[in-house]
Length: 508
Image (tube, rainbow, N blue to C red; front, side, top):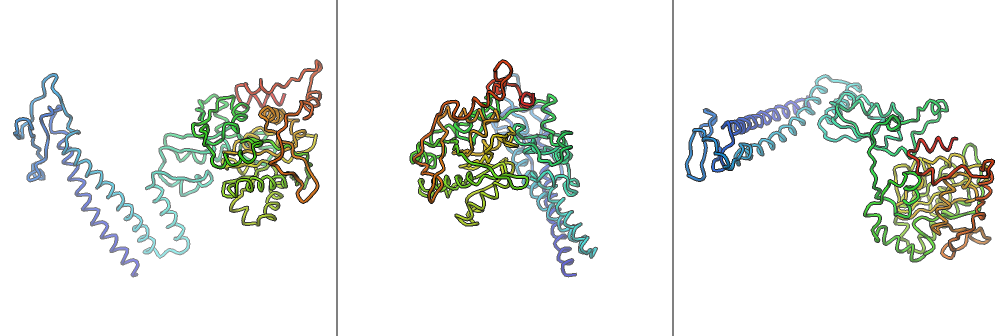
């Protein structure tokens, strides 16, 4: 009962304050309107319209001041002659002062009225004596009230379909980020919140929504609304400037995934971008580049439905330790990510790093994740473990969208650990290896006997081996036609108009 009395007293006080503010708003509105409609034409700049405060509340009259003749009058001045400078009433000093005060009082009224509505909800709840169900109802009403009063609301697609958001007033604009990664029903749940305008932001060149139903994929359930609209000819606006990747990292994705349309922002082309980290690494290990491919002759291991590659995991640890050592501990203070396509390899990487640094180190300093889970994120240094190391195919590592995600997460350094002879069975990965060799960014890492299975990485040199060293000829022989010509020309493919055409070409 004391709570109810305090709430009632507070509500009464708030209503009195709102009444006073509302009176001030009405007073200011009348004055602004009187000035705005005082004359049927714009006056000469010699004149000014003012409020007579001593009589306005009774007469609602204004008077006119001529600054040139120093005279005042209640009569409307004559219209200015042709060529004479004019000033509209809305630009008069007194009108602008009243409007400024009016805005201040309206904002104050809305703020206090918002508080009043919250107290009224509490009053209704307390007087009804509701139990647990009443708590939920009160919570929902408060959430709706808060959402209605907010200018910007951030939420997930899942929550956008909740009862609370559905009960709010419609939003003028709904922006859906990562729209190419959500199935259509999820996007529709957010679109129903919009009253007039929706903006879908996403990259259809990267991973779509994850679904496990084969029939769902066959019926295109994993297709996003973004992709459907794009394929149906809806206008798509390309955000063609990237501000994340060093140019040597963005070079390959730009050429292969974006048909050369992606440009580097002024920040990433600046000589000091990524420094002092980049300067320190390149000065201590000049054989490394912002993009480096470490060629490791390893073997994969299958466990259930997933794969791992212990040698690649150990090399990832060795590489991290080397970078941290040569930079004097600078790398351990950076945002570093180790990503891989396979969940089993992710767990193996976590165990490998945890056994060396401790479990807390992984959660605080190094992010170990699958490629799919890392979409939309970034890191200063990214180490990508490809895992696949046999001659029978590379599984879903061949998904060009997953490849795009993996190669575009790094800001300053991207290290790809792979068995080159294995990954070149896929034309996109073959082109990446070729690109890395042309950039002198391929470093063969031999396995050795000793306390560490790998040599000192600072002493290894990049290699530009002959074509046959990476078994390119064997690939060409396997995929050539009767005339001995390889039908797949990746450079020609990269110039094709769209990702859809690329996929259809690959399927053929």
